[in-house]
Image (tube, rainbow, N blue to C red; front, side, top):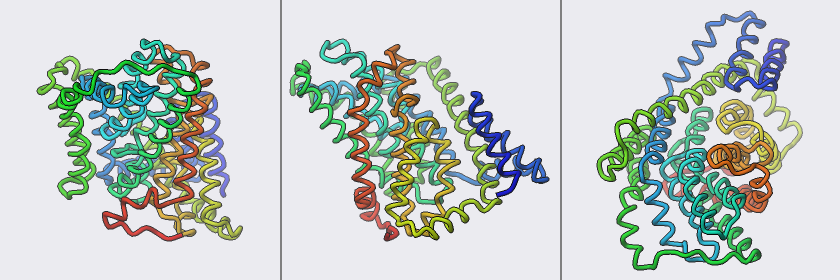
Amino acid sequence: MSLAFILCIGTMFLLAAIGAPIAYSIICAAVVYLFTAGQDLGIAGEQIIYGLYDSFVLLAVPLFIVAANIMNAGTISERLLQFCVVLVGRLKGGLGHVNIISSLIFSGMSGSAVADAAGIGKVIIGMMVKSGHYTAGYAAAITAASATIGPIIPPSIPMVLYALVSDASIGFLFLGGVLPGLLMGVMLMIMNAVICHRRGFAADAAPPWSELPKATVRAFPALLLPVILLFGIYGGATTPTEAAAVAAAYALLVSALLYRALKWGDLRSVMMDSVRSSASVGLVIGGALILNYIVASEGIPAMLAQWLKGMDVTPMGFMIACNLLLLALGCVLDASTIILVIVPLFLATCKALGIDLVYFGVVVVINCMIGLITPPYGVLLFVINGTTGIKLADMIREIWPFLIALLIALALMVAFPQIILWLPQQFGYVPTKF
């Protein structure tokens, strides 16, 4: 490990510690390395250009962001929510179950946990608090926990980023997230039912079953979006990037023409928000591409893989250690930074130990999502605090049971890889045995 690399890492952590955006911290640290190592600073621009323009898959990220923002701006979220209320709202703790089911459905459209929490999450929190059966902290906590499912069930922006650094198939990564996402939803619903039973929450009022056909018809165009998306990818009609474009176009047509809920002024606002979000992700990607070049130049992944092999680390031991590290990092870093900067360090070791990259990628994304609700710095907690005004202390007090439920689901996936790999195998994927 050279002096230039030590200065690079030191600069990055110093800038991050004083509050500089992580993208700027990475880029400045990379410039320090190139200058100290005597390399041409133009390499930084070269790596960004090659990385961004040679990777067609990256175009899916802004397109999925646009699709999610359009759905939040129109009435798609509200129609989906009403459908879920009719479906499970009459159960004890019904609005909690509605919260989770709506996140499962919405996750098949947006690919973003933040979009889920800030959009449909804000509406359901208001419904839960207004019912009088739930505290504001409980409503916010279950909303944050269910929003973590968003990037697990396809489409998924973090999985697109993981595919960029690992060369794993996006299609098989998407398939690998389906059963884990459903398992996370089931665990959250079990925990919600247990808490509601112990606290004696009254059953919520819900429309009669006779309203289900009407609610289904109203929500059907929105419910059709995940079907179109997945059929396009796995039916061979579209690539994942083209499917993202179809999702954005379909969401626009449904919101603007069918539901007539999106005006031209709203569309401009949606596009501006999407540009800002895409630009922030793009900066992190650009910085990560330069840093990955530096890490590869220093031979860090190969050194790490050789060191771990020398210690005779088992694949399961490596997975447990990675889970603990990623959960800790998830408390302070966003998912895109972890996937683009930290995860590439482990890929050589995964290959050396025979760990399947699709399995590893899904586990990585789940860890990053759980980190989004881990106190005290869970990003989703701050998002909900900013959109609803609910106190962080109230959310943190209520989040622990749901965090435990998600950790149990994660442990099951790590222990039983077939939960992740079974569905990809049905579509012809041949996983690595370990």
